[in-house]
Length: 149
Image 1 (cartoon, helix red, strand yellow):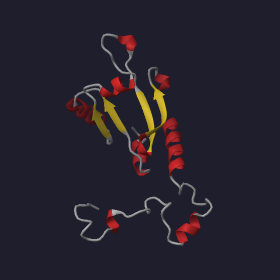
Image 2 (cartoon, one colour; image 1 turned 120 degrees about the vertical axis):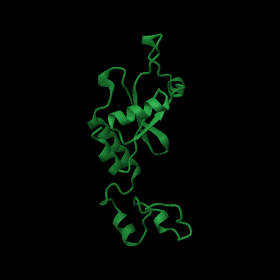
Image 3 (spheres, rainbow, N blue to C red; image 1 turned 90 degrees about the vertical axis):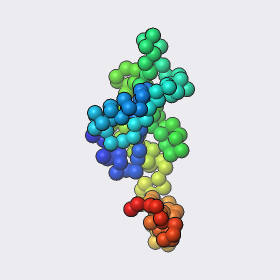
Image 4 (tube, rainbow, N blue to C red; image 1 turned 180 degrees about the horizontal axis):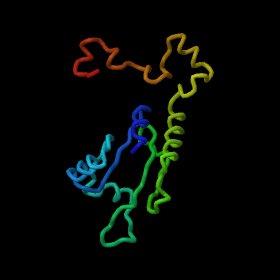
């Protein structure tokens, strides 16, 4: 996926879930050269829980491909039903969705927004990613053990 390097730079994660055994999933991941996380759902919990079986192709029971765009906290932002090819999201659609989610969840999306510059100048970085809260590299030396930089 040519979009993945851009996704990674944007502090965004993607996951592919396949209805196969873990070994087959890893072989597929290596075969396509994917750098993101692949998960195995060999017991078909996801299609069962979401009721996304392709009932028109019995007895094989494949699942209807779906793409879920999620907000933080795994809140569903948008669902694409890929039963038909044109129902699957294009790279441009994913880009637009990820832009919309980022704009929604990042208070520092627009550095020109009222009050942001004043907060920064005052040392209040709570609305700025990745500066809000304590990070491992800011922790006391005893607390930072086990973290890689």
